[in-house]
Length: 59
Image (cartoon, rainbow, N blue to C red; front, side, top):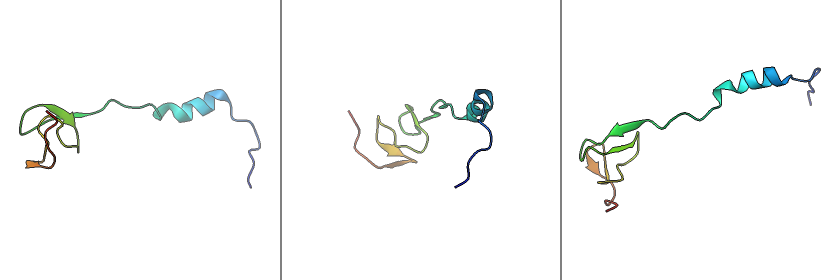
C-alpha cells in the first residue's frame, strides 16, 4: 500500500474539504396545488408529480 511521505497539514486538509458542506434544499412550486416541494419528489400536499397523481394525499 502507498503511504504518505509527509503529514497533510490541517490547512491543506480543510481546503480540500471546503466543498463538503451540505447545501440548502431547492424547492419547486407544485403545478397542481401551488405548495412548495423538493425537486424530483412528489408533492406531499396533493400527491402529484409532473402532472400525475402518484400517491395519496397526506391530508
